[in-house]
Length: 430
Ligand SMILES: NC(=O)c1ccc[n+]([C@@H]2O[C@H](COP(=O)([O-])OP(=O)(O)OC[C@H]3O[C@@H](n4cnc5c(N)ncnc54)[C@H](O)[C@@H]3O)[C@@H](O)[C@H]2O)c1
Image 1 (tube, rainbow, N blue to C red):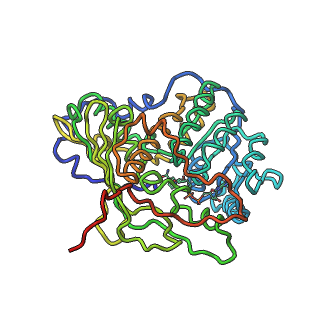
Image 2 (tube, rainbow, N blue to C red; image 1 turned 90 degrees about the horizontal axis):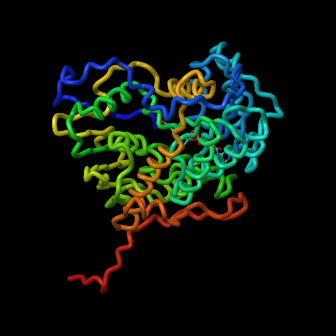
Image 3 (cartoon, rainbow, N blue to C red; image 1 turned 180 degrees about the vertical axis):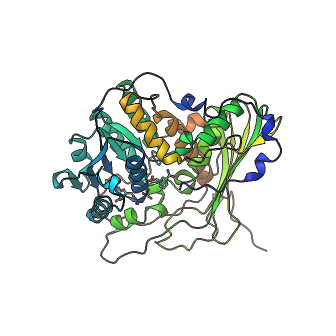
């Protein structure tokens, strides 16, 4: 989810005047990987294909079309016909005429079903938006690399270590081909974050010796089952509630704030010790097999701890964002610069400029994979009750996606993960 509930307390202990007087957005280009030019695609018009015609994708596309000239939506793909139809109608009938003029979808550029991803990659699109549910992203990105398409990929990029490694292998090749990739961790394109992070790295709050990060919200959303739907159709339509589809809330949602903590430290943590559980969510199919709270004690290679906790407890206090505690002050990661732009629009402007070679080259593949794995290792530690190192997580053979996805098969829910707490002898009751 894009909206973060920032904890503004973190900016109070240090005055804005104390921070460097560097020009407002001088550090913006620093976020780009290299200044090298991307492979020139169709530089006149950047042709867009959407794989995963969902809600977030529609926001991405709106900002892409509103924020750029000479871009065109020409192809759509989804596993469900009704999702594709909704999406097509939304953009073909868009109330903004200027957006409508950037939509030109022909029937033979619309693809539905499990192999829709292959078909959209055979079209003449320049850039693919891989905006599906997270479980399938590594497979789709792998195919997009073979088809040599520029990429926008939503976060998280996988739900397990096997998927993360598959994604990393693919995006390294993608980068070597000179293609561009922007990921759905949009704070990386938010100028208030970019400049604040640069100031933190320049020592504005001294050495960052500890961090806190929260993702405490109510329950996000559930879909009631239509009796006509098979198990698998229901899993995919109610995907937020099944671990193999979304990776659980720490992966699906908290990745934004975890990514910003990795940004501060310049890379992922070395280890994690975590716990959590399912305190209140009803144990029904609709609420799935995910937990409703996680607490993770991460440690970065320089010894800096990150205390993360996230929960989906409707009716309780909400909190979000981060708090970086330095030897000279503290920051929430965006409190040393003002910016009233739209980070989602900015990320799509950056992508188009990267593709055209008219701006810095962006390739965010490995970085978003590292942030995804940071979240996954927190979940793995919590689910098992064991301390876990980065190496163990990265090399783990854990794969949680069903081997076969077939609408005719059964996909029972759960079991809800329980830490491997095995009493040495039967518990005694007095
Ligand atoms: N960056 C952000 O702030 C932000 C905000 C919301 C969601 N997201 C991310 O965007 C992604 C999509 O979320 P959403 O809310 O749009 O969900 P959604 O359910 O609205 O959209 C996902 C789409 O993918 C399709 N899909 C699933 N499996 C497919 C397959 N195998 N082949 C083709 N299509 C398939 C679904 O039918 C659906 O239309 C998630 O990864 C989510 O975490 C990011």
